[in-house]
Length: 231
Picture 1 (cartoon, rainbow, N blue to C red):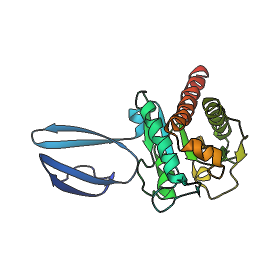
Picture 2: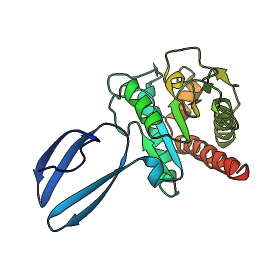
Picture 3: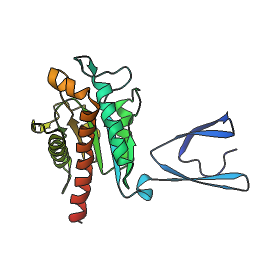
Picture 4: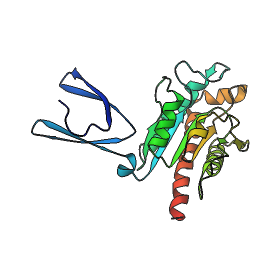
């Protein structure tokens, strides 16, 4: 039996599993849960991410599932960007940062759900991983630190990490893209071109994927260092 304030709950169900019960709650927005078990009652409190965490990042490996992205030289973009996200997670797990991932498996998440996650979490930054150039939303200005600064930091740090050559920043030409729907600092980072045979070979190597992840990780840490210095 559910009782109390149901404002955050759209629907609920439960599954019996070995040794216990799994509660499945469909919520109305992005939130964190705090629970207390007392006298056989489970008390659940719903809090906004900002009430729980000081630093919040959303990582968005593009595509997934039926959406494969670019397919070139034996590689699929959806798999390459997911490998980068998983390598990045290994590094971010050791930091005092709450990280939301739009996907961590080969599944397709609708673009609207990705937008809801980014805006709903009120993240400090939203980083989308693709195999294209560093893109940003040029119509949405955020004083102090915004889309252009995030895109520039990402390209600079990833380029240094892989000992590559910067391609320069580009305003996203697609007004319907995820970047134009976000109200937080957001940018897309290029991790290579699958159409280039040499880069495709690099992107098939685990050590190179980790170097890309290192660059994105360093970008995130650099952004927070900049924000701390500026108060």
